[in-house]
Image (tube, rainbow, N blue to C red; front, top):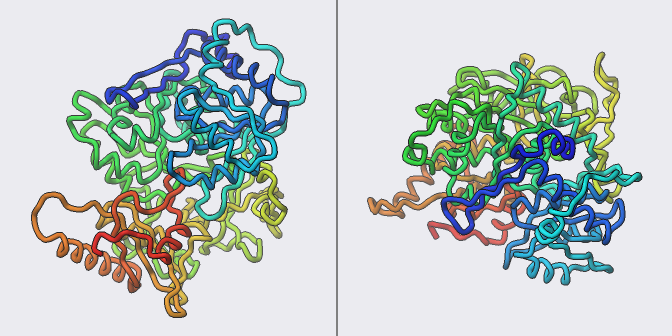
Length: 572
């Protein structure tokens, strides 16, 4: 697809990366389709001297166009690409160390800027054979001008195109083995879901700051532009976090923008973007923004839509979506509409595994998703493996060509989520193999609703509670990230909530009294909405709660930090 586009549209812009590292205004670099093709071939030729087909190529580089050419060049050479985050100085490298030991890479692809640090890290890795360190930017620069037309691909390409390592929210990282067929099938499914009513415009722009080593960032930022022939405007997660308005401005400045972000990013962008940041700009041309990676909260989407409504942002531009790396990235989506996009269900009934609609005031609100036809989706009793009866919550199972083969080098006991079979399937239900997602949900009135992860379910005094529900209740008061945990205390489970809170700087009032007021408000809200007493409220600074690379809360790590008394409390 890449080389075909380079042949048909050699001078059209393919990827633009805006770097804010040294200039707050941003420095843009654009590659045309022909330039991206030549750089990819140059990297592939270099790799063919140092590795064999099927070897692993780990990518440890800053978010940049060099990261893109490293990923594409590795696959062009017949290697299995392994995109990873670049470890920060002074941080622990446990996740990357695990992946190194898991994959035994033949090469590590990086850039000249960070090659020294990456080289030191590679030297410290516990590998019998040290991988070759290759600086992609120097290779691409030296070979770009002399690169000839694309030669034939290796005859014995591996069945695995790349390994997508999970972000480790509920377990140690595992490498999902994804094929080119998984990727192309999932892209087709995604496009049919998002553009069922109208075709994607030819001049649509993909706008993304998501990290390339995360499943959505990889597919949206690198693969989708190639598969769809769209121009992509990219930057880094750090650039977004430094100034979220950069993302919102890009949505307005580029034609028919299409983007994606996790739930927390919408809150951040709404809070941190001023009217002055968008002076003279119009968001009316945005084609859609995917909200995914963590449970979508209706209140968050409503705040985002309301914040930018006077810049012509509409609620139907929001596209809540559900997916996971084991299904490449995408499973299904919904269309947001402020009046119909959510439904309310009785909290006690949900805790007991039943579905009972209720009024807005009394119930918990859940976002609606379409029940997809491709891939197939069923709600299954995870103990009997029969399809769950109507009105009951069960595990979400998925079947389709986008579902991966399994995890890299994991034992059969660690692969049980793949290859599942439904007992006595209903008429029209595929025989499988099925992917057990580990997510709980239900179908009501023909719509899919997602309630949370099985492993994250809280059991407090014998009753089930979904942490996302409690966290959403608290966020309505505090606005920041929240982790709801069940912690053993004197032989029973008690609710602990860790709450990120930005301290007031207006100088009005006593901060101790203010913090006490926040605690009282949160305690009352949890009691009223969920019938729970809070064992402990831990108020911490923003950024204190451990998260995955995609922004999901690492609740197990959070609980361990709490048990070790490692949180620095604002009200200590």
